[in-house]
Amino acid sequence: MAVTACQPLPYDHEDELPEVVALEDGSAERAEMNARVYDVVMRTVVRNFYDRTFNDVDFEAEIAARRAAVIASPDEETFYAGLDETLALLNDGHTHVVSPTDNLFQKRRRLETAPTFGMVETTVRSRSSGEVTSFVSKVREGSTAEEAGVRPGWKILTIDGRAWGAPQEWGETVDGLTFVVRFEDAEGRIHTRTMESRPMPREIGTMQRRPDGVLVLQFSEFDDASADWFEERLREAEADPPVAIVLDLRGNVGGQVTAGERIVGGLFREPVVFARRQEFFGEAVNRSRRMPAVWDGPVAVVQSGFSGSMAEVFSATIREQRRGLVVGQKSNGSVVFMVSFKLPDGGQLSVGILEVRTGAGAILEKRGVEPDIFFEPTLDDIRHGRDTMLEAGVRAALAGQRTAEAAPAR
Image (cartoon, one colour):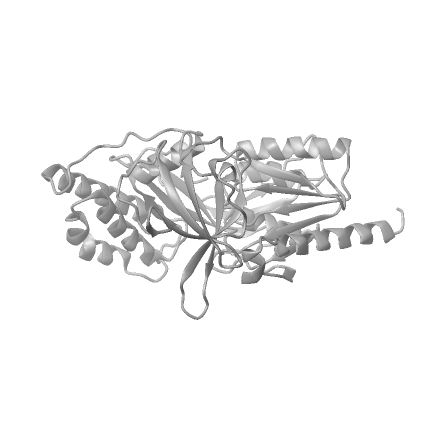
């Protein structure tokens, strides 16, 4: 990964808690820190952003024009909103900032110290009105939501009387606090539940061995922990083979290419090139690394419009190598190499630094991966807790299993 020399910022490590600098709103110290962070963010982006045309934006002129207004922001929330609004001009999903408050919360969640209700949320946007509605798609075992009897498919209405999804008070802590959450089920009945927000271990992945013999594996990002978990699942599959494997990458945000090398390698007995990038010295490629256990039986991948980055490269590799079918929606189209930096106030800056192509040379940035079989759930499916998209993936995997059985022996 080539990065411009003499970086003004240190690299950020995802498993290190940031040192958040406390600053009084509207103070001279706040203004001074705003100016310092703004300048170092913009300087770093200008030096490192992979598209030297800045996606046809006069970015340096915009930086200068917006600087005074953004650094005059009285508080952290407003300041970081101004930073992100400026970076959004680049139209790049990997180049953004995370405020110190959010950065600390996200790192704590990764290190299993952040509070949660233990329910996974699915959002649906109305094509006519643009209104966003949230539903419970999954309830984690052992969570406060499970204890409260929350069910998949319930629409989430309010939390402590305010709309679900409405901004909470900036910096508000939820550790160990109890909240009243209102839901609506598919029949329109209202359910009110009192739930405590408490820490839960990170859920690296989930597995389901179905009655039809299909093994469903789901994980939400590509990192070392996910690769270790995937390797262990393949060892189990080697000892007790399923009829097919479905990889559920809906909402998978991507992650580390090195983890991708291992996870892709779990499905191929010989190395395959799955990513290409142009660096200063020429083209560089990423090849899969064979895992100790390899699954070479039928495979299907389920993706959604929220599947991004390395998850998209993975789906594209499965298609290009004719390894299996991709089912679901077109993926997010956010595929560049990214590096993250620590900011002086405890925030984080991420910058897209290199264009990435698939092994076959396809550009996925702003294009995404088209599925072999397009499928999206209806609102009625979601309301009744029916995972019809996953069922479509299972049908594709079983079709591959039948095809493999019918093929002549070699």
